Image 1: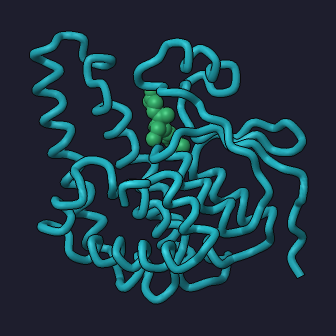
Image 2: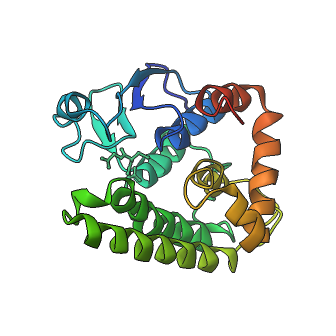
Image 3: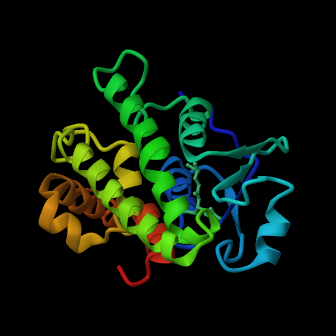
Amino acid sequence: MSATPTAPMTLIGRPGWGSAIIELQLAHYGLPHVLQDSGDLLDSEDARASLRHLNPLAQVPVLLLPDGTVMTESAAITLHLADITQRDDLVPGPTAPERAAFLRWLVFLVANIYPTFTYGDIPTRFVPDETAAEAFEQTLNAYARKLWCQVEGEVKGPCFLGDRFTALDIYLLVMMRWRPGKAWFTENAPLLDAAFTRANDIAQSTPALAQVMQRNFPKG
Ligand SMILES: N[C@@H](CCC(=O)N[C@@H](CS)C(=O)NCC(=O)O)C(=O)O
């Protein structure tokens, strides 16, 4: 039997943002949690200022553990939730055949693809000159598409790692709604597109996940 902690955690985030990746996992595991809206971190200095004492990068997700420990970084949180629940249904365990690929692509998604959103959301934060920022944004978006094409070559189908649904599929479910947009995936990355559809079907047919999807992506 797995030991599931009962004291609530606090997930700080924003509907549709990366906090959805963690909210879906908390719901999947049935872990008690409360949600706290970060405000629009891209638009509001007040929102950024009030988050910085927890995460100096002023990014979400931020997860406050029952003992007050602050966790940031979705991949670290993903691994931690599997640890504390002692479950291996979203994170293949150490001896599972999918383990190495899981770790590789989990880190790839957060270390390579996620930063393209950080830099691309407001390019002038990193390249102040408007003209240069425009060129930077184009190069960055092309680079992001190249990264997704690399991921496409690794999708086993029907889920990312084959038959089993893992936390990687939860990442796809959220990140593939962002740039370059669903239509691009349909046209250029059919395996990812199919994995997304599969993950979406699984989420929609699991009441706890369907509720989180609806809260984060009310438009579907
Ligand atoms: N490496 C972090 C990235 C988190 C991240 O970039 N979150 C976005 C929301 S999806 C954010 O808070 N952006 C605000 C900003 O970068 O100013 C993770 O994996 O959790």
